Length: 280
Figure (cartoon, rainbow, N blue to C red):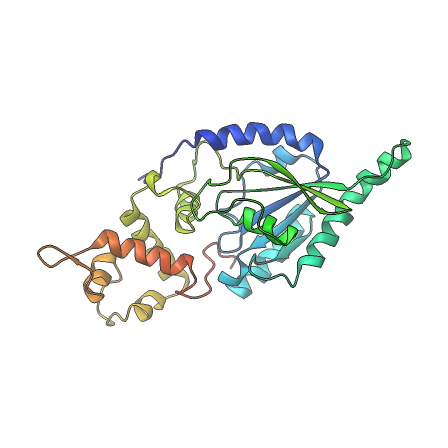
């Protein structure tokens, strides 16, 4: 059964604009959510970027399962032949590493320009990624100050702007991109888990139940232990709502409030460091 439907018109427009912008940049930074590195990847990224040099950032790695992030870093490097760096917008320790890698990836283009008799210029880079993977937060990290508008809701970043990072690097901010039609519902659920899809596109209670089911498969007993459920109690939103005393009139479980709280507990890391795209 399909629970998630959306047609993000402004994102469709952004994707068209993105294709035009690719002609004026040398390097692309693809931002993925480390908790769902496969599900947060744009399905047609290879077709879209063609042979454009790319740096893949596994963002929000501070919220992801460390062992899984290591495995995915290796797999993505092998599969794409591009560099992959685990990162977090909250930590600047790897900033120099990221900037140096971007400049390195852009050097062949600059050398080619010089060979044609043109003056060397700054490497031009753009950031792409699904909504809410932390793209604008990464841009803020790269320029070390908050110039790009950020928000917690899917698709908040709308306008493009050039930002001078340093004399060797110019960055073009661009909106997150998302497919017009999500044919893979399993990936769509995971995008909903991490708040990459606006809540008006899905039933939050249904998504929370699916989230619980997915977590139970990968991290058995985590939900039960976190919400202090008895061994024989079901791990569903009704049971958790009753346990937490989240009630509506008549003493019935407030399942909507419970669903929102469960997803927020995951999104903020309160449930622990979890990765929901698993490489066995």
